[in-house]
Length: 311
Image (cartoon, rainbow, N blue to C red; front, top):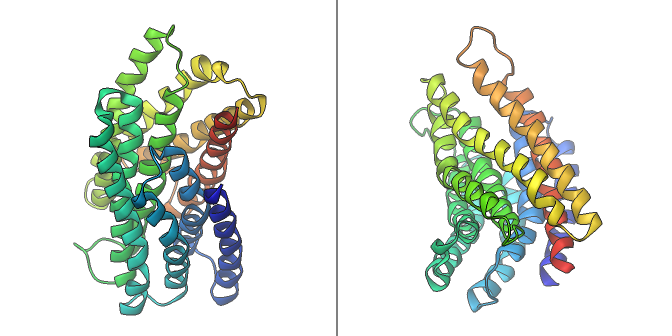
C-alpha cells in the first residue's frame, strides 16, 4: 500500500534527522520532543491515517501527496534556529494537519459518525490534530505567547499528535472489535469514550496553566489518564481475546501494558505538582512517558491494528 511506502520513507528520513540532530547540537528535552514528533510525522501518522480513512477521496489522495514534503520541511525547521524561516518551513505541516481535519469533518457529516462512539472517536482524532500543527508553528515562530515556556508550547503540540490523534483513533478502531454479544462491554466502552472525546482539551488546558495552577493540571491529567487506563483494562480483558491474528494479539498486549506504564508516569508527574514532594521533573517525564508512549503503545498498537486488518 502507498501508505506503508510513505511510512518507510518517513522512517528513513527520521533516522537521517536523528543523525543530523545529534551531530549539530546536544540532545536535551526540547530536542528529544522534536525527535518524537519527527517519528510521529514520518511513520506513525501516515499509518494511522490509512487505518482511520473512511474512503479514498481526492482529499485523501491530496493528503498522501503533500505528506512527504511537509514532513521533510518540518524536520528542517527543527534543525534551524527558531524564527521567521523556521516558522515558514513549519507551515506546510500545519497545512497537512488542517487537511486531515477537513477530511475528518467531511467524513463525519457524510457518514453520520456521531451515531456510534467508535466512529466518533476516530473522527474526533482526525479533527483534533490541526491544533497540534498550529502549536508547532507557534513554537517555531519564537514569540512570546501569554508568557508560556517554550517547552510547554512544544509539549502542547506533541500532545495533540499523540494523545489526541493516535490514542483516540486507536481506541475508536479497537471499538470495532467488540462483538454484538457483548452489550455490557459496549456500554462501558461508550461511557469511557465520552471522557476521551473531551480529554485532549482538558490536558492541553492543564499544560497551559501548569505554571500558575498545578491543581488544574492534575485534575486534567486525572480526567484523561483514568479513562485511558480503564479503556486499556477493558480492552485487555474483553476485546483483545476477540482478535484472531496471534501476532496482532501480542502487539495489542504489549501496547496496552505500555500504556499503563506511560499513563502511570503522567499521573505521578501531575501528582507531584500538587504535593510537597516532586516525583518527576519535565525532562524525566518527557523521556520516559514520551519513549514508552511512542514506541511501546503507539507503534505496537498500529502494528496490531494492521495485522488485524489484514486477517
